[in-house]
Image 1: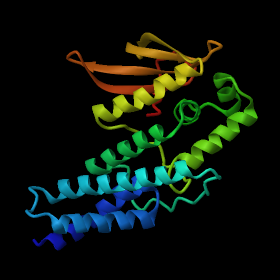
Image 2 (image 1 turned 90 degrees about the horizontal axis):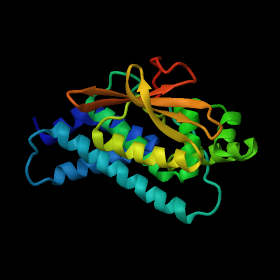
Image 3 (image 1 turned 120 degrees about the horizontal axis):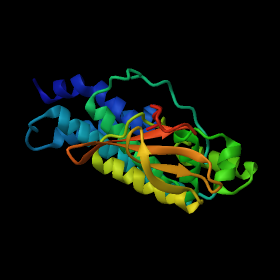
Image 4 (image 1 turned 180 degrees about the vertical axis):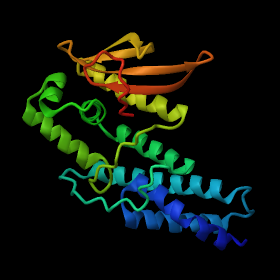
Length: 245
């Protein structure tokens, strides 16, 4: 099979990866074309075209995001909102490469936000808190909280459209970076984190500055190693199975 045939066979997957990271069909298509140019210029064929191309399109899309972020940081006015086109690949049983790209997008999204914006995002999108509860947790008015939420939406990607938060974050490095972005931001607004048993195993409980339960982390441990970190949401007995990430 020629290179162009290998590429065309994987084009839909590459577009899906780029689209999930960028949230823009036109930018995703440009990323796919740039990926083809890099593949065509490679001096020797890679051992696996699928692995090479999936990694390359992710790098291209991440470079686009960094460039967009640099432009946005120089722009003092409001960022225009856009509409996210319908997801062309809604199948929940996505290939491993796409799961990896969603995790990358989630990490980049969090790292683009200020600590206060991260706290608002986590309380709303992960813990499922309403505006009044978020305002109480971060110590601001509901009007200010709504402005922060709007700021999060405007900063969530280059076009002002929020990418969907993935149901799972894949990879130890991605999980570590997400937790490093989330926990200090919550602590900064007065949220406390206390080690406790959750779902019959080790974990930690989050409470707001008034002591109200926000949710918890449950750790699934096998042979002394953490296999999964689960969000358990809602002021319950901490024995439920609700997962937000």
